[in-house]
Amino acid sequence: VSTQSTGFPSPHMSGYLLAGVSAICNGSFAAFAKYPSVVKSGVNPIIFNMYVCLGIFCSSFLTIPFFTYNEYYADKDSAGTTFGFTPLGLISGLLTVIAINFSFLTISVIGLSIGQGVWGGTAIIASFVGGLVTGNTIKSPLVALAIVLLLVGVAGIAGCQEIGAWLGEHGFCAALPADEKGEPFLEKDGPDGRPTTGTELSYCNMENLEGRQSDDRLSALSEPLTKAQPPLTEQAAAPPFSLGVIFALVVGITGGTALIPLHYAADEYIGLVFVPSLGIGCLLVLLAPPFYFTANGTISDMGFEDLKLKQCLLPGLCSGLIWNLGNVASIFAIARVGYAVAYPIFQCALLVSSLWGVFVFKEIKSKQAISVLFGSGLVLISGAIVLGLSVGK
Image (tube, rainbow, N blue to C red):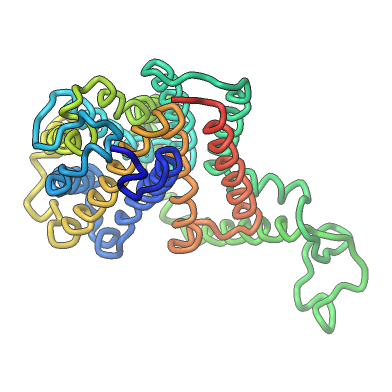
């Protein structure tokens, strides 16, 4: 089926566009976890993840009416146009389930910023290697530069707050007045709040100082509560940092290779026909929560109200729908530009999720951190563009 006869854009152009759509969807689906009813419910992340995967399963079957367009969608005249099940889709769904579940576990141990950096970088390398295994070829030595740019961009986005704080501590910011001891002037320091003499204090350092002062006040207020806490030896030991890193590596490897089974599927199961099989694989996640809660011994203390169905079911289903929309777009992109090119572009989802955090959820407020975030985002996108020019299908 030629693109000229259908009136669609050229294969490569449409592949890049759909890779971008996939990045937007995959960077947005997790925002439903911060929906007010979900946050207030205090639902266990594993349970919410179950609703997300249920949404993936249900939405997978919405592709069936579009199977007649699958020859164009899969960019292959021999692509199937009727429903069919392949165990390879089951494997992809299982890998997706593992990636989503371990992402929650990673965040609980080492946090979202570090976790995203580790699994994002791992997924880029895993997908690039997987793409080479499944037939992509390197056209230019610039591919090494592309990988470096992608990894630097991911690391910068993940650590934007730490980098911003470091820049502030080392004076890489606009200066505000300070006294000779380096202390910020308050209103009492002069009739107009300005110093009579003094040195310059970075605005970033001012923010850091205010944060430390706030921490000191909070520590003073919470001192009685702190004294009432049991000794550290009596408290449950926190999971080691290395365990969180291992979880993140699992996310990157499974997420970065989740669609590789698609390459080995028979023509009758590729493209849109592959999606329901993947959805059935995701249905296996419904077995994960009982296993998890049984393993940690909390299932006996749980009741029906802990499922938080009223508050969390609909947001979870919508989250799964958005994820699957991105998944459909990613399969479309892979068929046109190859796995090694498409999947690193998908990692721009990290930038999209960061934008949600800045403009909607106000997770990052420091001007320096936001500057690092957007600068790293440009590096990330540059790496994706260079990679697209360096690797061929």
